[in-house]
Amino acid sequence: MQLKISKPFWQVVGLGVLAGMRTTSAPAVASHILSHHNSGHLAKSSLDFMQSDNIAVTMKIFAVAELIADKLPFTPKRIKPVSLIARCLSGSLAGASIYKAKGKNALAGAALGATAALGATFGSYFLRKRTVNKLKVFDSFVGAIEDGLVIGAGIGLNQLA
Image (cartoon, rainbow, N blue to C red; front, top):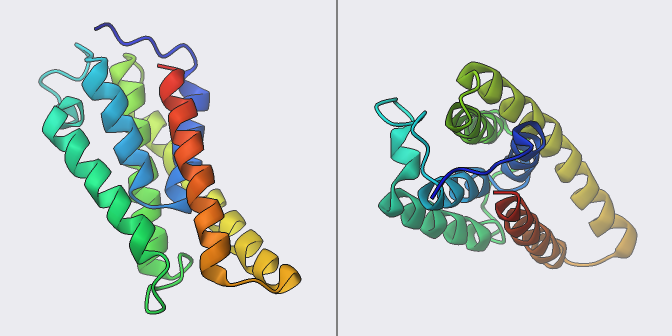
């Protein structure tokens, strides 16, 4: 099926935001889209693996595992350097894949995805922290709401394809 992403800029920004909220969500959504809408621009490139059905399934399994792990008390804060780097790399991979699939500059897509992930990491962290403190609710409850937002946004980004 032909790739029909009409607004790759906004899709990559959205994927970057997802990466900032849940590290594995952006590559999971991007690989799902690309496995259903193969692009000749990705063929024979280092990003071709993102079109694989097996990679799409694997990424979804990782994303579900992350939804569970996020609620555990020993999970590191998303603004810790290693977590922050992982989120930026995740947004970068998703952004580069979508841009390359559209015949655009993969480096520009990577930069856009990483930048959106960076901003969303801090934004979602402080919003979640403030919500927990203001509403006096369990962090895992707010995390579950955040999970719902990530899943809903992922479905919405898939609809753009």
